[in-house]
Length: 612
Image 1 (tube, rainbow, N blue to C red):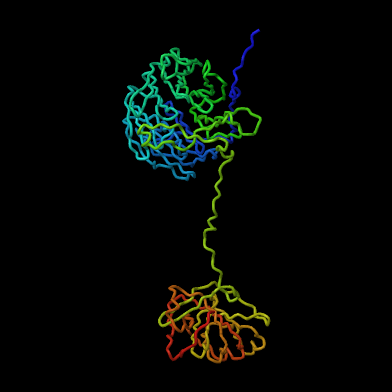
Image 2: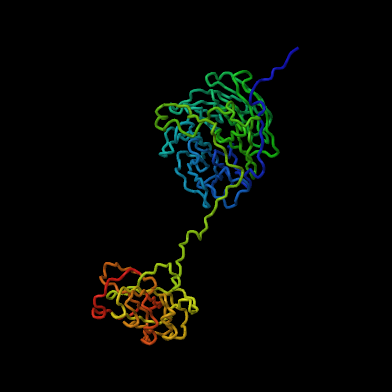
């Protein structure tokens, strides 16, 4: 009795699952250009898709976290004069992207982490060396700044994008080049051509080191990629237009290692290879399914695993680098399927019950650090990729739209200055000065509130414009800071205070005096006691004066007009106690002032002024 032996593999039960609708990318107008390209490129930070654009070529770049419906005003990357044919992210910098177009140029772009509102139209460097459209662009896997381009002029050029110069040019292909793929360390690359030949080239020797005529009998386009152990995996068509795949040893091209027929369809099979698991994902343009295979060392060498099927056909496909998968969900690969109007992520997962890190699923993978500099590679040195552990691997952002908190514009405005009213004792009020011909005048202040006089309250002094204050030597026996409140908006008509209205006994504290308009107070020796009399003044106007320029500073108030002097009877000696008496006045300075200059006789050697 025979028993069937099932091949042991940890990838036998890998299954694909599309994300929810709200976790996809909607309203993307995928390009309709007739070119067998993937139209999509993805890395752990960004998703790039070639889109329809009028007036030249363009592609769209989205942060992976910006899921859902695409904003109609989202900026595009524009700059090509013709349709964009291929794009590829730099493996050593997640913000660098290369593109090529029908305008015969290739461009390298710096993508900012935060996309603004304006289109990106200035590339870092423009690579001009082809005479016809450029359809292939691919980065070197281990050397920094090395980029390969291939065009319809049958020319392959290798560039140093750091300097913008062409390092190597090869013209060994007599017809259109279908695809180019580097090997693991970047020492060789393979090509498929319209002449039905599969070639392995050494770019630094500028020669073809191996060649196979018609690995597939059909005349339809072929694709070829290098595997981890140096073999070649190819897809093509049979003579009867059946799609097939093959595995080849480039040192013995006579016979294939494996050759497997698949189905009958017109779409070109695009292979995506994972060197860590040795799995290949085949995505056909126009297909609604993704087949995946495992390559092993025992026959039949290429093992079919399963198929992920969906309802809608695919226009292109993007393949996430291994360091961008979610290790917490046992995700071993993620593909980004392009529909007509959207992009749908598909996760390939190994079913495991344990939440611990699965060492057997995640060996050390290729990291973002380059192993070589351009000069080292050009001199003939080869290095394998620098590996990094997946134990602390990159975890994509959660499935929600990135929201940017906008700063309140009011927070950046200066804090308004408080009104310097007579009842605000906490305000640091500057002194109004007049020295020689220099006069500092107070600015207009908001109108003050009308106070209510009561025996328990301190009656304020309200001085509406116009008022003029002249100080004589007798009125300033000691240091006299002047403090003035803001002006009144309209003339006031208060009742003048008589000596009997404010008695000496009712004013134990500093007494603001009420000055009805139009008055011009003249302070005599009898109206001001020998104690220090603080007078309140509004802030000075520019330009500021240096305190060292006046030896005997005398604070003076210079308001316009002096219609009526204030008599001695209006401010009697009984109304002012020997304590400090603040006088409050608030004249504006709308017009130039003509103050009376001080003569030496008017102020004979006043004592130094104390700070207010």
